[in-house]
Length: 516
Image (tube, rainbow, N blue to C red; front, side, top):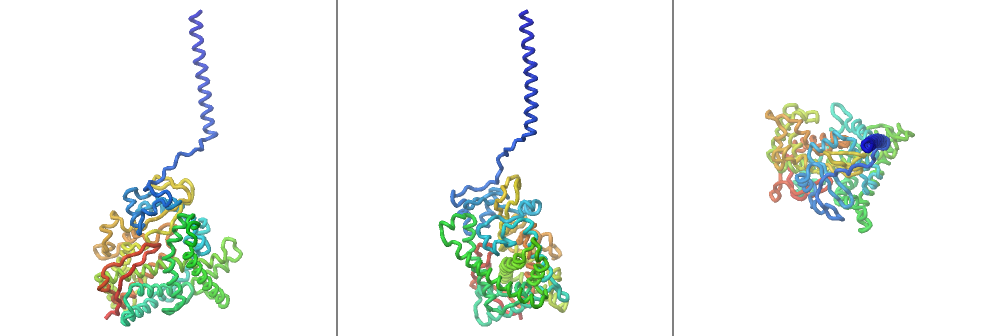
């Protein structure tokens, strides 16, 4: 009896326990399915150097942040993070990582970050700098690109109208530059660059507004002086963007930046108003501004297209386009004067073409100038005068890049300098060697040219990229057809540069004489 009692009781207990455990397990599985776990695992952020509790890593970057950030990539990899004041910045380095971000994951990085200073550029609605919603940015960017295509590249005879404008303006520039030297007005680079900037403003004004200004005209001088001043004061806006509290600690820190941006907006609004008044009288569309007015009238009443916003896209074209093109033409002039042998090769290409074809070159003839094309690309690569694109931002939740989690809104720097000076992509990148873009037969290697990064890429690529390339080619061909460039004996070699959104050669002298 005891044996039976002792034997049966444990058997019943085990069975009940088993049934209870099975029911509990099923309940837990159902509960997990119906009420899934919402707690996310801790995000894996990119690595990066430690920084100051208040300033972050700002003091570690020195006077040349592009060089410092490129060096940091050797330590922390292609994707790493920095702390700029209270803002976290992810830096993307090298062609492969940048392609992954901007070409393979374009919608993850398509927006601009929220910056305090951007609200003062073009009324806070800049197509280039403002953190616009994706659809809104796409809509107004298309207006801008279409206007350029329809009016700057509109053909007059056998050439786009912009070719005629560039050729005429550079011929005028050549005369002014050689006259400066003949009159002993000085060979200072700053004077040469201001002349180039004046030419650039005329080129842009011609296809934007159908206007040109004489050298020394107050309008042209304003554009040049205001752009130079903007370069000097933009560092204050960067400080406020990264440390918003600093504007309360240092009252007036933005005064210079605000003064420059307001003066430029006032100037541009007067240009737009004058043009609208004239358009109402004649109704012709012969330039970009005319085209934008026509578009705004066509879409009047359409809630998707604000008339003021449509017209103000021309401010982005003038503001962003002028500075980048002016700096590129200045760098081409400097490199041509320093590298005399390369200059002579380009002049031989030009002379041979003119002798053979009995006409001046056009942009469609670019294939006949492989060394000139190689020279331009090598200047863009070696100078890398636009070291970073305008900042991107992480556009949506749950974005991952190279295995790292990036929170929405994180600022993203695209380091173009790191691409153009990558020792894996370019043998001896510190050396200036246009021949790296030519094959054994002397033909331009377009696949190598595509490795140079200066205009960004993907959905935020510079909308004026094609126009800038045309201007650079025609500028260099026209200038070298008419002039010999050389460095002053007191200032041989490449000049120093000062870091900025776009970097300009600083100091030095250059001699420009008419060709014999």
